[in-house]
Length: 291
Image (cartoon, rainbow, N blue to C red; front, side):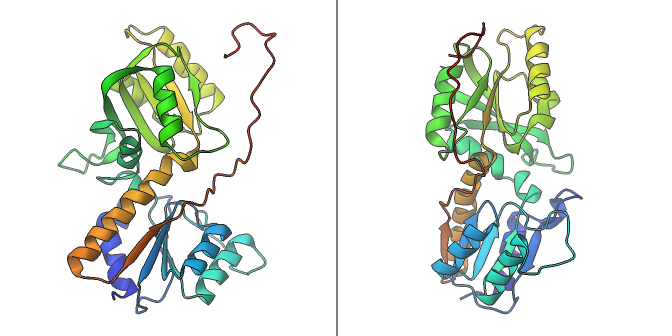
């Protein structure tokens, strides 16, 4: 049975903390380096539901993609909702470790897992890491489909393959346009439009797309010389990052087998997407309304 420090060293080898963005907060939040680890739970969000799940499971280590304290704090009092998470974990000897932007740009990383869930073939990073001589690390992925699909069909595939959320998949573009190449980026991706345009792909699937960047991207696309205007697909943030949990769990499983560790690895299926319901629009009085 490995110690926590040994498991953390293995995770840091997968996602080196020095590769995280300067503003990020990755690494071990709580946990005794000398404690034994027999069970690990992977999840996207370090929220109370996940902490409770880790305790119920008997996990010794919780690994999440999102940080607990991204902007720092002056208190871990249990009267605060984040402090309650810390108290729950420490009182039950559950360590917490975070891999965020260092997992986003890893090879394989968050966007590789997203591409895999959508049955896409990864061609290259969307935004390559300039320090990576292999050219495999970086933010987002440029991918190809084995067979062309319409935007409508590709959106249906995403809705089917990604975890179900209240949002589902939103589409901006011609539903009947053909998609052969796709850029994907797990999590918020509307800062990547310049790279997406430069990649010349038919579609871009990400999360948290906002009105103005999408409107501008569609206008630019309509005036471009590309054969197919860029289609945009907006999924729930949590749903685009959850596939990484399965990838990360498989990576740790492989490490455990290689070292001969008695380690059981689990992936949380608790939906922590904050949106809980969706009411489809039914008004048809406006020209150009989606159907």
